[in-house]
Image (tube, rainbow, N blue to C red; front, side, top):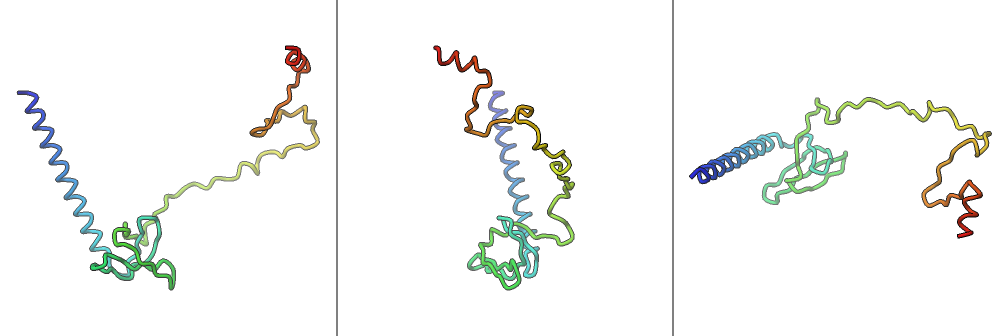
Length: 139
């Protein structure tokens, strides 16, 4: 008996969640449709910004001007949102200074033995100890 009540509660909660999310999505779509008027700045789903020129409901297409004189015809579903000219879409990121310029320059006059140089990928490394090579050849 307890399991069936628990199952019914979960099914009712799932149905309520689906109903709520469906209403929310429809409300967002209707708000977007009211904002999608010719002349509005829009962002397409693939990140292209432009000005909406016209929307054809029969063909389900929209004409977007992405540059002066360049008009692109796209499917209406690619219009993802209306861009507010006052708000910035890009987050403010701090400017990182070039740390390589502040690092001391490499002294080319030093001996190679003084510096430890890492090998390049795929480069063979010769053993430094001559006894190691003798042991390998004797085996």
